[in-house]
Length: 229
Image: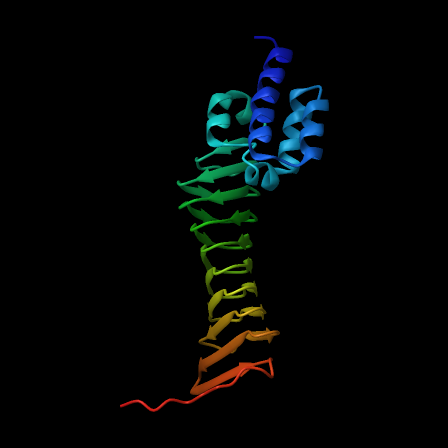
């Protein structure tokens, strides 16, 4: 098969997905206008989160055109230290500068300067300088100098010098010298002297060095003590 025929085949498969899932018009237009495999793969890489979210890029598509996608460092459900990785209901290890989008019940262990966008009910173990964006019911265990942004009902355990931004109804447990920015209805518990900034209805429970305190920013929150039997 010629390079042009392969390009048209991949474009047809992607566009078929965009019609089914009503993808953004500008991505469809960019794909249609692409005149080479390198240009097409560049569009996918530059818009990887959107392409995966709209189901333009799926495990089935990558498997069907594995040779082409692999040559442009786009992988699915496998260990890697380079490129872009789609992880769906799978367990993988990544390092280096890998960009990962994880969905379903995936489990990802990441080191180095990886960036991970996790949705649904994924479990992420992040080390060194990994960046994580967690949505849905994702659980994140962050060590070293990781940066975690949690939205929805994510649960975060943070250690060392990790930086956490928690939104929605996220729950955070922190120790070491973490720095936390909590908003929405997030709930933070620390077991050491961490830096915690609060806004909206977020609550911060301190439980370290003999201190047992609760901090909150909202004037609408009332703390009620109950009597135990």
